[in-house]
Image (cartoon, rainbow, N blue to C red; front, top):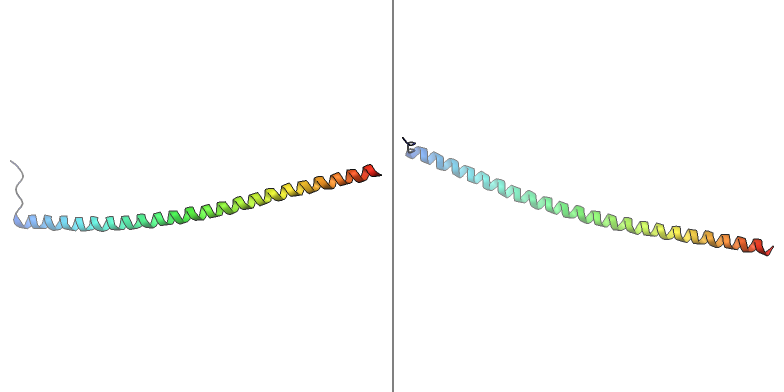
Length: 89
């Protein structure tokens, strides 16, 4: 014996339940897509900010390196002048 065929009211109840589930599923899909767009936009902003910060740090690091090089060059020049002054005595 197979399952009994649903009566007319049972079929209507099933159809209403299915329609409600479809509506809920559609609403959840819309919310998921909205959340995904928001997350993607946030990720892009974070990556842009990180790139800007990294570029700033790279410029600062290069400036520090240049200043250290210049400082060492000046110290070498001072030492050369002192040796020259000492040799002239």
